Image 1: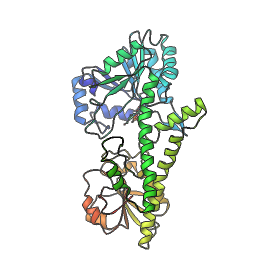
Image 2: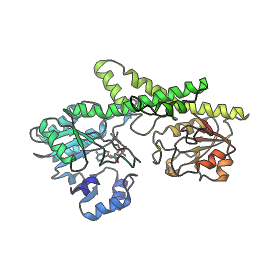
Image 3: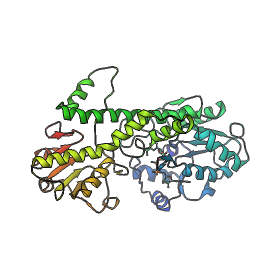
Image 4: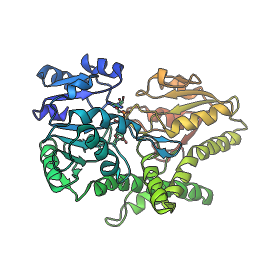
Length: 400
Ligand SMILES: NC(=O)c1ccc[n+]([C@@H]2O[C@H](COP(=O)([O-])OP(=O)(O)OC[C@H]3O[C@@H](n4cnc5c(N)ncnc54)[C@H](O)[C@@H]3O)[C@@H](O)[C@H]2O)c1
């Protein structure tokens, strides 16, 4: 959308027909892109959504943003490889290919370039430009948008890097060139591994602090008054989405494959964060036990299912794992999440509105995602047991 605004002619190439039809009809399924912005792009005549690879004909720039998931803990780059094979026949002298998907260092030069060269018969860096630029979008962030977040760029040679930097400088305020694609690929993994490890640190500390009778939240707030050398991270029910649980494993996989070492920080952080949903259930169980109740047969209301506040993405959300364990243990589950759609949820979760009735007719309420706009005072007043994993209620009810 930003490229359309900046005056480029843009084709959004997508293999999912439902998504193509949605975009063509002006309905945006991306939360950060409004229907109005999409419609304005369509009306400009400089944007089209398409399923047809023939629309690659004559491109100046291709930006690859396909999924890079894990398959049984191993990076699955088949989407990237398929799209490279589709693009290659359309690569012409002077054209440019940029990879944005998150991946391990070396992917651009060792996997993407050979596929493009084989399919085009041309040479990267000489006949056409290739580079890597990590995606840094933070869904739901109103302060840091695509435009005012600096964009790290790289190329397989100087020429490629400067062409790619010039293109992105038309879209964003600041571009940050680095020497080779490997540094740019590592930049993204460093950013996400940093978050993953620090979240694991406060999560583990939260478990110990609770057992020691110390308020971790107060300690974090106090530490945050230090104007240097400390960055605030808060505990929660685990990590979710497609970045934190996945990206650090791309790095640890590569370290193990090429150097034979384990990346201990990543392994430890995975272990701590993956166990947080179990810990949340353990705390719910202890709370119910205090009321002479069991999880089995209890009515439990979950507040927030998405992995991130104010977004509707429940994929790989730790809240969904909490729900799954509670369900396995016999709980009757209700949930409040204005952003998540019922048809994306398992049948054992019933979405309800947050009302006097729904907040008081449960044995326990668990705040898992701190969406704005919910009536938290109502929850604070509820007669049910409340476990606040995000400390949204400022400590007036039990926090993690
Ligand atoms: N979503 C984010 O906030 C975010 C942030 C930073 C990095 N990333 C990275 O960006 C990449 C994509 O993530 P996403 O969240 O946009 O994934 P997504 O699954 O929402 O979207 C990717 C789209 O690519 C389509 N696709 C797959 N193969 C294709 C092909 N050959 N040709 C055309 N389209 C194809 C899929 O159908 C899908 O609609 C991943 O590497 C992810 O790690 C995402």
